[in-house]
Image (cartoon, rainbow over all chains, first blue to last red; front, side, top):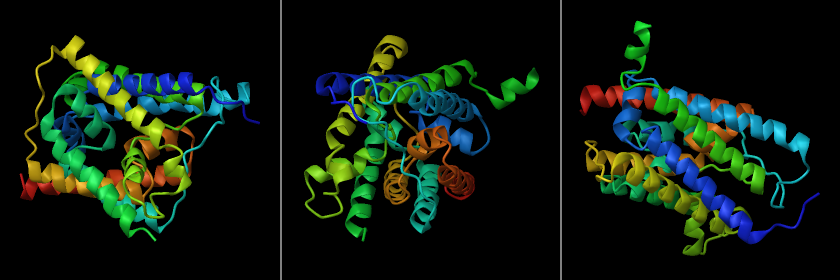
Length: 140
Length: 157
């Protein structure tokens, strides 16, 4: 069952949600590679709190909401993160971790860094965009 | 609790509040639109505006590229609001050298797209929907990231 989507309200909700995400990333200092690298060197466990807090709230929504209503408030359908364990996921995750451990930047913070004038992170943003391009061009 | 200051040398409140806000953001997107708010897909879906190959023209990219770009624009705006209102608007910078950012970024982009998820896609959305493949993906990238970060500190500081 799917309700007809309300396009403009959906666009506004998406923009607002992105903004809240970006504010949270900035407030939690996850847009600073140094803080992420401290976590990866076991010097500062803040990232665990960020991840834990985010997963907890998300889980309540993902698991609870579809029981309360058949479709999202602004129409459309409830989607799910496409997750499968296979060769690509294993190799991809391992490579992602190597890169993340080297630079301390993942996709969200690379984008959000534009909002705080951290132009150094444009190197990471360009790298991620080119890496995604290479993956798409080499995909079967 | 003396341990708190060693585990969290820069405090813990902003981490927890920031994390909860990120959770509210992902939950709000789902409640209103049903969309799953991972961040790495935008790096593939946006190429579909330019690249005319079958991979990039998959329906999952062309159908979501508009909202994903909007979501990314929101991310920049939200960070800018924090920057101006809370941080005072002094441009941030990093001591991580450019080559590490670029090479690391390439691996992050390639790996996240090959593995179909990053810290938000597998970490927040995948774990949030209790999917065990995402848990395995998170454990895998955490392990390789711990390894890489510590080896790099030792050999390529």
